[in-house]
Image 1 (cartoon, rainbow, N blue to C red):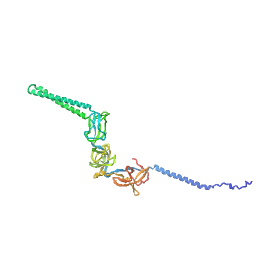
Image 2: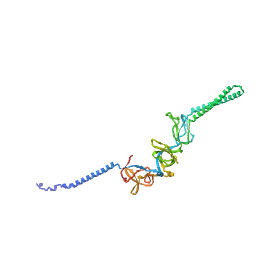
Image 3: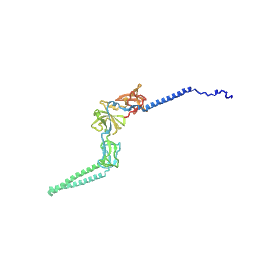
Image 4: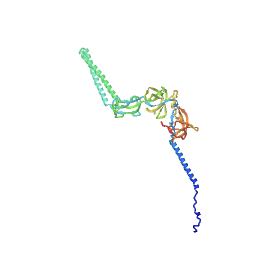
Length: 396
């Protein structure tokens, strides 16, 4: 009974009231909604960046240009050719037994280049010479006989008919000797045709046949070769350029030019127009123009591709020898915060590069510092293009 009457209020568990838990639950919900909103904003930004292709731009390459290009009225492309070039072949047919040159060798006019097997024609030549000797012996005998008959006829010891027979035999032998001499000459030419010589001073560009192969003038058989070597006079190099019909009026004879080889873009060669071929190519709608070098070095080789800048009248020919300058299109350079900059693309973003500029060259601008040859920059910069802007290269 004492236990029943005891005070049990001290054993009560204190619980927080229902109103106190509400602020904590509200604060948690706010954090969740903030995280959701941040995720939505991030996703929206990501999707916008993903589906936004950026500003379309074209790229240009920083390249070396000559100051004389400021005076260029027209540019064209072509190839280096030799005015004197020959595929040297044999007039005879036979097996090649000797080849005395290789690619790059220099030859002199008349120098023996190759020789064909000549045993058959050499035997024919020997036979023709022996026939000539026999005929010459007949001539001596016929001449002596004709002389005796003339004396006897004068003494009236023989008839006129006998003298006429001796005279006719003598004249026939003379004609036979002439024929024998021509036969010897014919056999000598056949032997000469087995020897292939250089027609002019030049350089061997290509070997077309090797020892052991059959050489024929027309190369009718699949296994035979027509030309033995190809040679060119390296002092007669020029450039054949195709100029559009629409621009041919800008080209005149003796017009000064600047020639640039694709193999050596830093080197400029002065030249001038020697001939405008008086016909057009119907398929390409172009006219061939021949440009001769005023001077060139041994680096210039036949069949090299070249670019030609036709200079305006009054241009200084010495400008072709000046040092080339690193240039970009003038539209690629912009002013940002008092600096001259160009823009490059890195990770699909425009990156500003500070440059120092120089003189202008017909739509180009010299870059003194900030870029190197071969660097790619955005070709045209406007006010919308900012550093960090997303860009994409324009496809043709």
